[in-house]
Length: 94
Image (cartoon, rainbow, N blue to C red; front, top):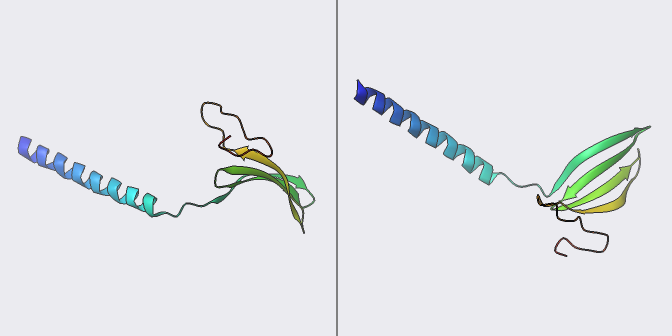
């Protein structure tokens, strides 16, 4: 009886390992997007504000029904330790 339970447990662990392995492989193969829409704020009458991220930089963009404009560079993604956001003219490494 103990051997049956042990074999069933080992079989279950092997199935779980294979399933997790396949999911990890799928995640690693997934192409990372360099442009992401982080948030939008509709302003009415076909106007909006949006935060767009390109690689590790964030930008505030405004748009209407027939135009779009860069309003501000928001800087780098803040580090968990509260590192400062880059100011205009600075890069993420400064």
